Image (cartoon, rainbow over all chains, first blue to last red; front, side):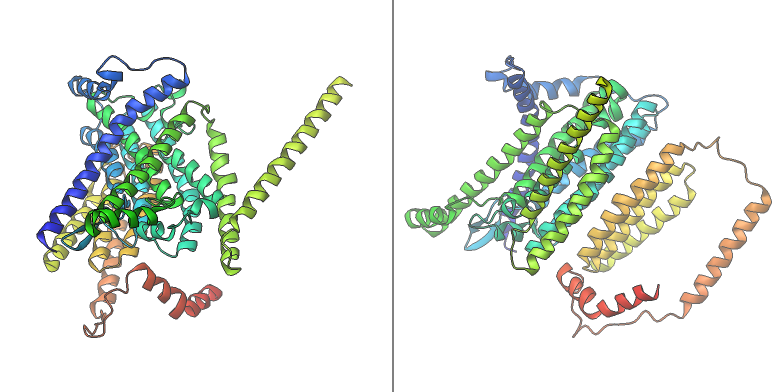
Length: 386
Length: 150
């Protein structure tokens, strides 16, 4: 590997790291602004223009607060908890393809940390490790509420990981590759997976919510039942890292969703844009500018999903715990398995659209169930009248 | 370079494995076991078996060990709550463990680790595409046969 390519590659990795942190920081600001918009109030607007310096002020406040470690806590694990949460959150951005290639010295360098042929499994492995930060922190606090929060987090993550893995398998069967870059390249020319895997997309999105511990699945930090959940005993920047890790996870899952289902850096008419740019700016500059536009489009998609996370947070109420488990085990996993079977049948019949049959089945089941429930309700009402 | 990495990784694996046994607190034991599994995954990576690496982390470190930790946290074992074992049971445990060691050493002493021919060896065999072909191609019938036997 030549030196210039090495420098460009390290720059890309550093930039990805920095952008991840920056987006997570400003997600906190965006969350408060979105919340304010949905609740018809101005939101943070004192620090800087439009309150843009608010996240920095918050971080400063967090750093200068008192570090407190409970006397009965196991000190090292107490410190290890937030560190692990942060590390696992940051690790998964390494394999996400943020853009096409850039030309340096006549060689193509990918806008991506690493392109491994187990990309998706890597993301999945890192996500499955994410629960350790919460569990260790919750246990080390030596507080029953923290422990309950940690155990809720663990059982929730394990339950929804299954459905998540199964919904990914349908994508893998269609693409035949685990590399995220290959999956993106196959979606070139409006062949976005959302058109072929609507059910898989909804399953994956729901599981992403559960894996990030976001509302409506934020039972690990349910204030009304558990005080503060697994981070009850945490203060200062250790608490800050836990909260921050949640926002990083949100960004990464949005990025992965737009990679898997929404074509990544592909956008309609990108070939025309590339040809026009290479025609007017020359081969190298045109290619690089076209890649830049693709990356911007990718971030646009990602930001939409981050907004979606916040939108849902202020729209849906929190689940009860048994509802959460019923949804995970009794609805999502059977649907995911059926989806795999139908996708497989579709691949044998040479059609990618088989997953839509699943949509029809689900709609039918819901309609029939609703009708039956209505009938029952009408019956009980007529009984009570008689 | 690869040699040194291997020895370092092996040292770490054995160290964490020993710490699993010698830790007083069962939660620490589980955490050391997770580190041991990570080191074993590192060995897979050294052998260029990326798929096994990922699957080992997802299944063992990500799922099974979470369940272990889950159960042990629920039980909330403390050092003072640990029941005192009698000398006879300790002696029995030592004898049983020693017997297992003898059996293992006897079985593994003369084992032929096999060798490979560098000229014909396919270093890409551990990648997921090749592994899938081997699994569902060459060994497909044998897997089915094993399943019908069990």
